[in-house]
Image 1 (tube, rainbow, N blue to C red):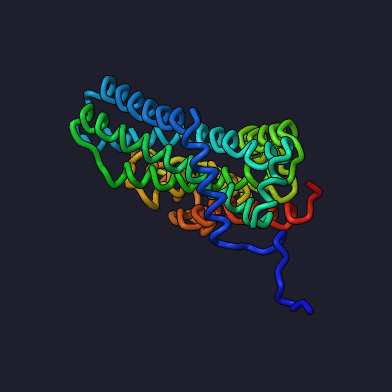
Image 2 (image 1 turned 30 degrees about the horizontal axis):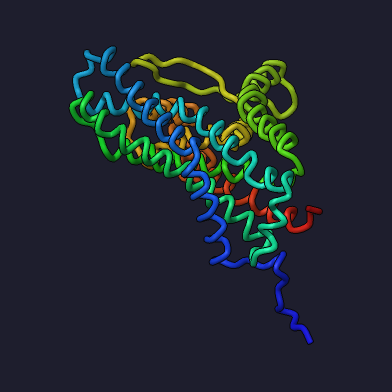
Length: 315
């Protein structure tokens, strides 16, 4: 006689099983060229940007200023690069095993489908995170040598937020990989995600401004006074709700959330200009803590949907 609380292997979640899948996935990845290539890439990125700043920034009086510029420029680069890396890491995570048939071997072990999905997500997230940490830590010695000194808090803050940003895209990638039958379809889905956020979403601001100029429905502009270099100027901005939509982009949220963990003057300047657009105080949906919640949303929601769908697909 079965109990209502009995869970089938395909639908239950076992922490030890998730850990086992994640450990094997991470170990397989760390022995590949991908892990060391990523670590070397992040190391080279930081050292190159630092070298350029040091060479062209001799007129910067304070070393902290150089760190501020380093964090700003690296964040602008990682905003584009990390999604590409995360999407590539997650591309074949499950679709590849479904295509080869090895997913059935994996599921013949005491792992449920949910265990496999969550384990793959943790494993791929760990690969990206450790690659970032290794690259940043190794580069710290060179960065300190080139700059003489640097602000460790801002440096670590950038690393922490970059990891969370990377996990958000890894969650999207692994989730899509779990609901596609082949690596070709999964690859197309990854391209679609990148195009959506870096082509379509980035053009929304232009589209919104064009609609506002044409006085389209719900696109009434708002006038405001801004002070730039001691001079007051009159300007117009889009209605509030458009900025909420724009900030739902993980990259936009990442740029705003950096103020939670860093104290970078160039980023603070952008925040100040945005505050002036809204009368001196940012609305809730543009504040850094809300942007952090948006990143968490992109981690939790895709995998929650995938957990439901992957449990029901025909392997």
